[in-house]
Image (cartoon, rainbow, N blue to C red):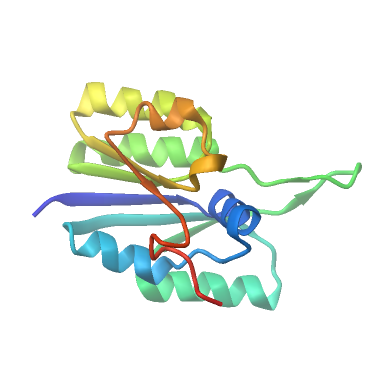
Length: 161
């Protein structure tokens, strides 16, 4: 069976799904979809540690599904903006895992990951898949993916509520 690694930029998927469709992403549907295509070897969800009850319940739900939830502290800047970027952490984890996988599945629309996908395809001969909201996904990301799956109301990746 195909060995699959899943790497989820939780903030990106949350905000793009909400902005485009006013819906939440369905991680159980994602898990089921990918399990039908191979064996999930690694599944990391990268999130921000905002210690409120809703976030804690969400992170526990991800763990129950099978994700390893990696947390970074929430940083509030003096100007009121917030920081919580996982790009480097996601990149390091994918680079460390790529040689043991047949397919890397990245959930993000962030164009910064385009170079990463090109690199792992060339150096590890791994297939790459991007799952994201089409209208909020950088072309520089999708042009380096072997497979692009759209998060849309018809895709089954969004909650109905």
